[in-house]
Length: 276
Image 1 (tube, rainbow, N blue to C red):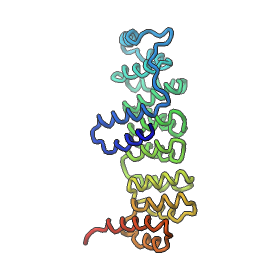
Image 2: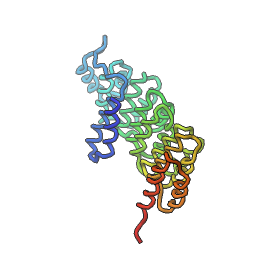
Image 3: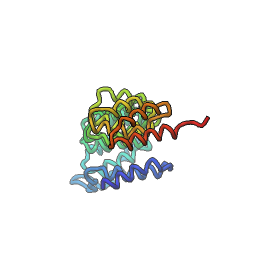
Image 4: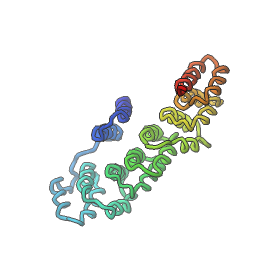
């Protein structure tokens, strides 16, 4: 299951079609959920068709009925209710749902967060980013929603989540964020624990954040073995020609385990040289 999720996550970057990307994301989301939805009609709950007839009869007042649906234990009903009102929802309804958000069950909160993300409800971004910071059961949903919303504050929240329980989800989300993250990543190195430094180094290399090279070089000579090795591997992704001498000096002092890594970094420096 985990290998399938990793393969699907990797394929997102290589999928240009928006519809295809959304399909892959939905598969990953399905695999990430701790339990499959229970499509059952609980005692006292009318059949779905009658519930939706009730929605239609409400007209502009369907907000109250939606709040009632979100309290249901039936996830199928909750999700279908959210999807039903999505085409008609406005900022007033989003605010109404947000006001009652903390009183909802965790599964219902997750449904609402996914709903906000799917509909790019940026007015509720602050609440979504708050769920990322909490590092709780709603965090995976919040990470996915935040990426879909995009804009200010998202990358900062994701970088802050590196090195935490949901570090892997935050890392994968950061691979899709737009813009140069070098400045934010450099700032995050300050005071970061080992797990976070490792994640930052991998991110810097994967995204070719050339502006982080000084921090990567500093980590390459760390006394912490895991940090040093990760940084040495990351160097080839962040070095530029002007760092050729520094990398060559490190190669000259390297041991048998480090030689290949510094050779890769030096080769990267040379390959990026512009012909005169």
